[in-house]
Length: 108
Image 1 (cartoon, one colour):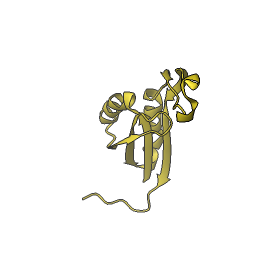
Image 2 (cartoon, one colour):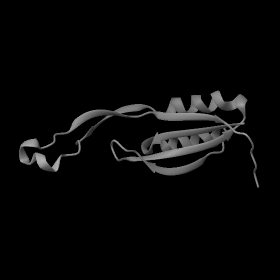
Image 3 (cartoon, rainbow, N blue to C red):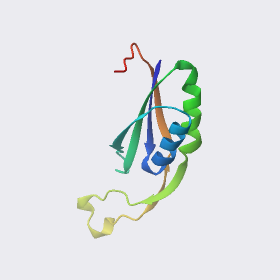
Image 4 (tube, rainbow, N blue to C red):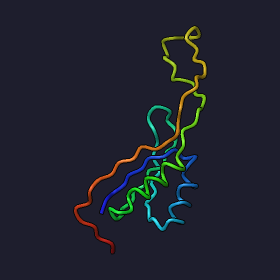
């Protein structure tokens, strides 16, 4: 067994959940938040057989796409009016995925 931990942007969560259901992949969904943009993320935890890992990775990759978004960088309070922040375009989305071996698995 393997544990797949996938962190995706909230915009991709429902579509990814539906794809998991359709593929008969059981996932635990956790609401999380990112650090840089302070935006909402969802973390999926999936215990899956080793031979299905690539299938799950392919599902995540096909749905969790990157996109461009405008954001206002955090403003330094000492900067005053002269240092007013303007929106900048950043790339967001995609997925960060970790896979780990599971030493033991119990389902009650």
